[in-house]
Amino acid sequence: MPKPWFDKGLQFKCTQCGNCCRTHDQYAYVYLAEGDVAALSEHLGLDRAAFLARHCQEDEGWITLRIDEPACPFLNEENGCEVYEARPKQCRSWPFWEENLDRATWEGPVAKCCPGVGEGPLIPAEEVLRIARDTERWYEGS
Image 1 (cartoon, helix red, strand yellow):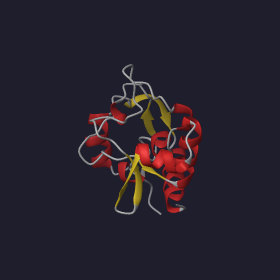
Image 2: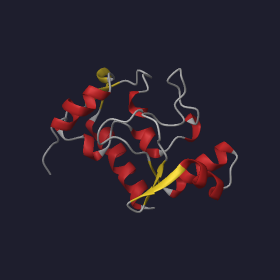
Image 3: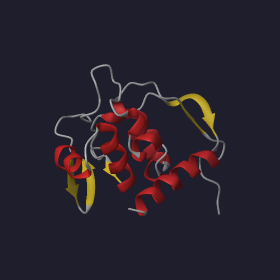
Image 4: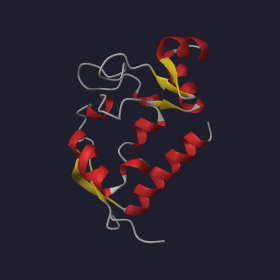
């Protein structure tokens, strides 16, 4: 298997800007696996049906958070996440998603959206790939 273009790793540090919680072209959905639904429901003190009715919609067979504004409904005015402890796997693994690891995507729309790309510590390629694979498996299991 050839080495990825980021074989030396990728620099990333979350700046807590909240940009990843805002809609950007194709980045307009937060997909939820069953484990995400369960964690968020419990965190919010809602049963599954009430959580789904209040906060979710279906998109091409996937459960997604209902985002009626240009940002996640759980993003507060200080750019903090109101459900941080129970945030979905998609949010936990940003920006290390398989679709983001294409060089043009990483250096283009991902870097444009996220000021933490290219900053902070160097994350080893093996760790980046592990996070991306774990995220894919999480959603494949739903």
